[in-house]
Structures are given as C-alpha cells and as structure tokens.
Image (cartoon, rainbow, N blue to C red; front, top):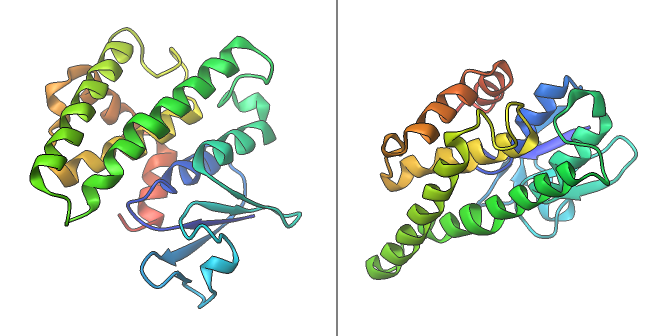
Length: 200
C-alpha cells in the first residue's frame, strides 16, 4: 500500500490513520508545484485531480479524497473502532462529521492560502471560519473527541485541518475545548510518528 502525501496538507489525516491501524505502507512524497513524486513519477498519472492524498492499494486500486480513504482504511480493521460499523446510525453520524470538516472547514480554509485573495474577501472567509470553530468548540465542550470518548478517523481529519490555522494567525487558545483537544491529539503516538515522517 502506498500513501501519496505532501507536508502541511490533508494527506496527514490518512497518514495518521494508517499508523493508528498499524498497517504497513510506503510513504511517497509529492511536490505540489511540479506534480512529481520523490521518485520522479508524474503524479497526474496516479491522480489526475492533481492533489493529495491518494492511496494505492495492494490490489491496484487508487483511492482519492481523504474522507473516503480514512473510512476505507478503518474498515480494513473494524476491531480498531476508528469508524463505527456500516449501516449504523453511529456511522452516519461519522459521515456527517467528515462532511462538515470537508465542506465547512477544509474548503473554507483553502482559499486563504491564495496570496492574491483580497483582504476584504479573506475577512469574509475568516469570519465564517470563526463561526464554524465556535460550533466545534460546543461539540468538544462535553466530549474528548468528535464522536464522544473514542478517537475516530474524524479526529485525525479535524486535527489536520485545524493545524492550518497557524498559517492565518488564528489562535486556537480562544476556544479552550479546541485547544485542549489539539494537545490531546498531538500527544498520540500515531500523530507524532506521522509528523516526524513528514518532517513537519
């Protein structure tokens, strides 16, 4: 199994999940500018969308889109509890949470990386993002993790996306439950190993 990644991107999420599960894999770095892998491959032949993450399975499939990848991985080892069983309400709630992270946080932050974005437009995006972070704070105020008291693939994703707030000078300390959550996730062995492997 191969995980195509780039530092400081959403590919950190499946990277963390792979390490949580203890599944053997090869980490392949992608240059986001040249679209070349560390071995010189054209990444566009692997994922024509042109962005990480991409997972190459041992049976030759290429899977893209982080929320799909992390659920696929969790289902390889259902005993891990990283995702509830398919067909349950708990799984639907997990998918609801992953979709919220994707559409409201990940997609909401992506334009902020564009240096050409006018300040007034950036302000609009940040104001919306701050409201969404308030919702996350409310969820975490009564829970250790997004789904309750057990770490899930959604936590790997949220940790990854929230780590980008430092690039926009958003101080997560203003949300005590989020700040404590980020410290809790950062202390996990899988997270520390993934960050070290990506040299972040």
